[in-house]
Image (cartoon, rainbow, N blue to C red; front, side, top):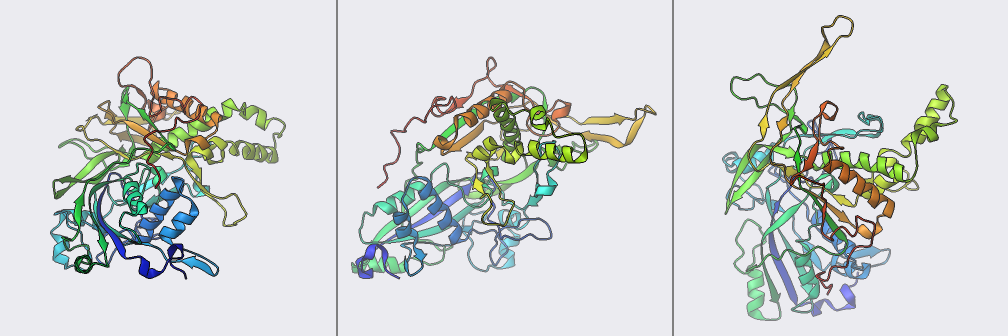
Length: 512
């Protein structure tokens, strides 16, 4: 293997080192690729059983971010290394695994005594992660169990902090690649772990300490040699840096909806927490834990009301499919015409309808991606979505809740039908958080798909599209928070959503 850029290894006398502390603003999931007793998808853990992030996952996320930002292959190969047959070079960039923080904001690395875990509520929360259920609905509005649409997973709660280090070997003191790498860490589109298109993996940079060492100088070499290998030890040789929030590149459009519920609403799947003396409900809003930090002290906020990004994505994707078919003049009765009324005809009609609905719809694939259902490499390849919708947490106090009983009447006896008596505890109005959609690669989305997305968002703002559970009984409808005509705020002034090319951002970071 050759050294980068065909230089001698002795030419690389500089070492750029940074220790980065990040805090996840949404849950994240770095999976093992295997299921377990409690969930279909488990997270990677360290020797203590605590969640961790492998260095390969960090490197993969950074490399993907550079590629998405237009960095050519030769440059990414120089940074991250490559191997193609007998050609290749080693990576100039190396990354450690990310270590989780305890309640005192200190990273935990290596095997620790059980007592250190038992007395720390933040680490205890990380050791007992909650299970989150998922279900994908098909074109009939029921669970798509035939195509792996019903599953659960075990994400790491939002708010956890992690520390990792990155080091770049270089032949110059002011390496533009190093500046660019540090800057891209704060890109709004950068996510860590899997399942980022259903609300996972968003984070913010809390602090960075860094330094560039010139190893040809004895004092610099001594300072570099004194830098500890363990993330749990202080790094006095590094200097605190200002965290710079990177402006959004031109390949991104942010859409913001400021809505308020018109009445009851609920994202179901949680356990009910009835008031003292009240009867429990069978169905209740989804809640999860979250870590909150005050200076350098962390605490667990339990049972925070959660608005999952996957639920918002699911509702929008179905409505996008509807409007995309409408704009393309694709109608069910015309597709089913001539298929016949026998079983074979019904099956043929079903296949035709399924081909334009849900994940098979071209507009949905363009925006929300596609999961490959075949192990055959020659089949249609999977593609990640272009829409990011983060999980949201209710922060403005609890909305009012009420236990609502329901009963289905037996049409013959006039009494309650068997197993059809239940109750739910939906939320009543309240200060709903802003909904934000980040569109990546907006110039790759066709005008028809943009128009379908715009129509779906307009349906949501005027109460024609529900979010969450119970839409059939009046739950989950919204209106503009300010009243009046529905408004959709776009970072480019609505140029892209109205079918035009994105406006170039003059503040786009110059690629060194």
